[in-house]
Length: 183
Image (cartoon, one colour):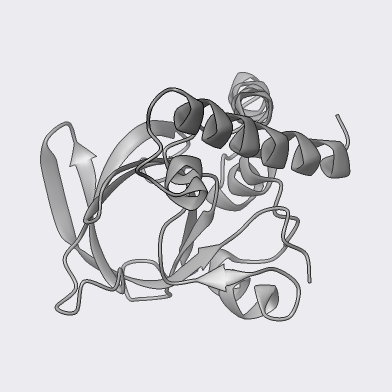
């Protein structure tokens, strides 16, 4: 599947999900809120998982960047800590999580090259689930919880679920890069 087709597929699925939710008696929420409750593009997600499995089968290192690029359709290259600045003027960026968006973690002493993940689900205004690779060395983590622990409720600091129900130290987040929004 081409990246352009994948982007259209993602947008179409968001609009269909929003329409279905609204027509199913959920008229008290906006299309944007309905789209946030939509699921990720399962074709892109499956492709990203397939690429990881192929790398694992031959002993090749698994990284977060190729996984996030494939799973989201956001075509940015380079270390994860450069994605936020690279997206400026090319993709819409936001400080609010959206399903399918790339969560860009800032560079830190614990994340020397930053980190990127794909928002898989909005659980609440302070919690999301992400799909990503290499949080645990050479593995993918699907549906991993992330909680906003920032003082201003602005998603600038988060804790990531390291094991089911256990959240680690806080990490800085630059923001969220929206797929299919090339400027």
